[in-house]
Image 1 (cartoon, one colour):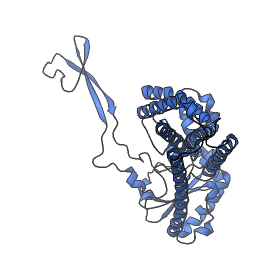
Image 2 (image 1 turned 90 degrees about the horizontal axis):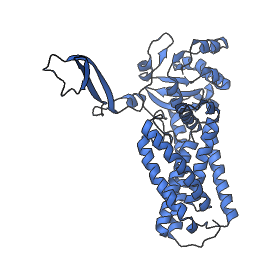
Image 3 (image 1 turned 90 degrees about the vertical axis):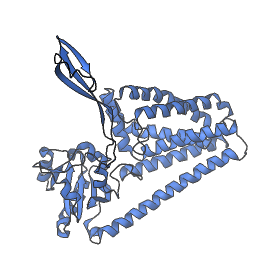
Amino acid sequence: MKIIRGTARIVAGSVFIFSGFVKGIDLSGSAIKFEDYFQAFHLDFLHPLAFPLAFLFPAAEFLIGSSLLFSLKPRVGVWGFLLFMSLFTPLTLVLALFNPVKDCGCFGDALILTNWQTFFKNLFLLALALWLFFDRKNLSGRFPPAYQWGVLFFYFLIFAGLSAYSYRHLPLFDFRPYKTGTHIPDKMTLPPDAQQDEYQTTLIYEKNGIRKEFSPDNFPWQDSTWKFVDQKSVLIKKGYVPPIHDFSILRQDGTDITDGILQDPGYTFLLVSYDLSEANVDGLEKAWRISVFAPDKGYGFYVLTPSGPEETDKLVEKGFSFTFCNTDETTCKTIIRSNPGLLLIKEGTILGKWHYRDIPDPETLNKDLLSRQVTALQKKADLRLLLLLTAGLLLLSAIFRLILPSGKVKNG
């Protein structure tokens, strides 16, 4: 029973920590998902709460998972676990039945599940929550209560720090299809053996004023008294969709320059803004300095935005005479979590991404851009590896505590 109880804690705790972490380091993406929920359920008046909830919900998940995984006030953690699952299991059933939101966002962009997969996952977690709840008398913290609260608060500070850093710069882990190193054309290509959309076609015929539906296999083709009226097709199985399927760059005159930019053998800077009226002015000024510097080096520079001529004209009047291009708003928000944000690409490969706070000075770009970005990528990879190793060591310590006997402290 001890092994089963401990395994349940580790599974539940790990899932909640992972879920909270991947959403916490992408607060902008989590806020967008809350806005999707509010819109789907006609709760638009709650939109101002999207960002606060985007932090509070993942933080609560992270702390509940830490409580269960590391036996820190585990009885409190079990209450939180049961409350979460009691709330979200019925919600995901509604999503599965009516599909108002295609992706629940329970694991952010790190792991995309269908609504039915999410519901069955939540059923499993709800069963764990009920089992741990009714067995909570056997859950006790292994340290004094004050120490347990202190460690949980320390974990909260770590979570808040990582969330703040990722929001003010860019997410430490980028799970979206436009992450650095991506060759965009590859992500837009449909594999030869890709699953195609499957439709169910119904043929409608009429005879003596009565309409009847037939399948393509049994329609009355030999009976001329039946007259064809209409047909309808219903999607019954969605085929393969490339990770990037809505990326396009159009000049303001409507000319499509997507292929030209993606095939350009030189360096190209793309300044992305999903709304120029809300774009950070300091970020625009930094980008403007690079746009002035770029032509002398033979680099391209374009602004991708869904904003129309009214907004672009305002920027031109302020002295920002960028080359403006039109790109879908959702695509802009997916490409980079910054408004504006800067990309560096070469032959369709994303070499660098900068939050507007981190846009470099033109002087630092005088040297070879490729070697500079390879060095920057290595430093970021080292940081991610350090975080993964730390997480692995903490998980191992939790497993060892499960296996090795130790004393208990009551009042858990």
